Length: 145
Length: 145
DNA sequence: ACAATAAAAGACAAAAAACTCTTTTATTAT
DNA sequence: ATAATAAAAGAGTTTTTTGTCTTTTATTGT
Image (cartoon, chains in turn orange, green, brown, cyan):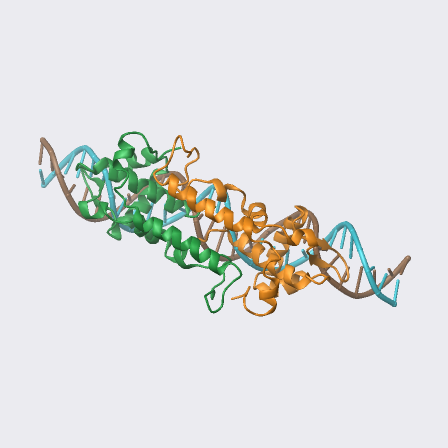
């Protein structure tokens, strides 16, 4: 098990892929995206449908249609994608799975975990969807394998 | 989804519980443990059987039997429990789920994630199973709810 | 208007994780 | 030796996650 669900991993990879491919206009189809990140096509389609409904990614149907990001969306932090897919519990939940874990009622590792989660949150809030377009173009960063 | 699997969360809570209850000798039965941490009894039994086979927790059958920790085991780091249950991929895996993510072939968030994982590992290696016995006794830290 | 295209939606199927119940085995006390 | 106890083991079921296939709807170019 990773930090994120598989669904969320696909979502993040897809989001980076779409950003890179549509930074200069145009759209990418689901087949290209799925191929480009190595994910099951129809499964990814569901994920992107959901992100589209939530307004995180843009899409149009029909010929020359596909997914893309507008300027504003490219500035969105990764945290928004993660929260949309996996929920916010990843930033707040207890490390030992306790429902009512809090500073007043802490599990043994409450403090240490809080720090970790805060670091994750800081990181995901500081990274934007469009941030790696160039490095992906240059082949310095990868989304497959 | 948490950082750990549900199975692992139960394991960690159980381990803390057993440590506290057997710090001064004796054993705890599975019913007490499951009740004490709020987990399904038979499911937890499986988990502890596995930890027992791996030598992380000690157990004896029969009357006055149950689970316990010997002195040495109390000094074990939490990382050992986590690795036994969830595997080591939690310390090494790619944040975006890529198989071949590495410094030479990095995903976009490779560096940031590595730091996070290292912090998790440091934390889990520095905390021991028996470390919270006193605070649990005093009712300062909790394993339920 | 019509055909082609591509996302959206719906209904499943497979696999994995989480959970339950029953039987067996080992240990202890009498 | 025997009965009681408690973990170990086995054989399931349920739920969640992941993945597939088909049909529908919206858009575009001719």
